[in-house]
Image (tube, rainbow, N blue to C red):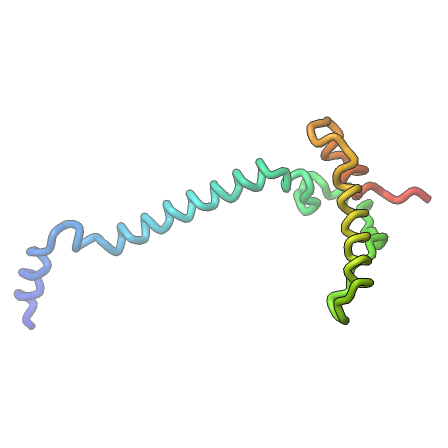
Length: 122
């Protein structure tokens, strides 16, 4: 192909065909900005933002957070029989009772004590 043929072919292309790669990159950026906005809105509206100790405003409190090892987990291995099912139901009932013992629409729902992230008493 000669240079003249390439120029002729390029001039016969529509504006969409000439700029489709740039349009594709622009649409990709717009869609990604939209999805990040949706994710941030969900992060803020779900209440996860109040629990995130990695935020800059919580650097002074981060050292005071203590991992609680009081929860007895249920073993993922072993046989399943009536005894293990009863143990699981008991552990589940204890955790469900802790989760439902407070007023869901009260002001202290997001308190440290309700979320079990308060400092242990010595």
